[in-house]
Image 1 (cartoon, helix red, strand yellow):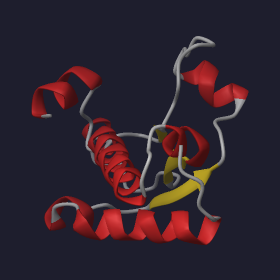
Image 2: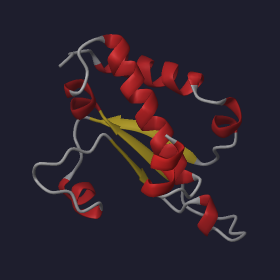
Image 3: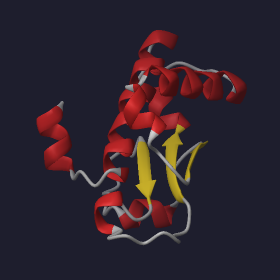
Length: 122
């Protein structure tokens, strides 16, 4: 596990975001990307996690594929969970790659992909 400050973690998120494919990131609209130390009990329940399961990131919102022309929707939210991400990394480079992968995964949910479709793309 690697320990870093909140400022360093935010810098890694920014770097990872800048390295994702441009068109997919440029087309994200009305989405807050933030982080928390750990998921809340409500977030864990929302995705039906068991006690022995970990949540690295979470997309909350209405995927583009389900908006059907709606123009006024609340902002979507992608949350990265700092402690679980740190736990899965031994170096800053590994942490950055895990953040990048988790961001990509949650952005794919924003575009309407489910876990099966995301796995196929990976």
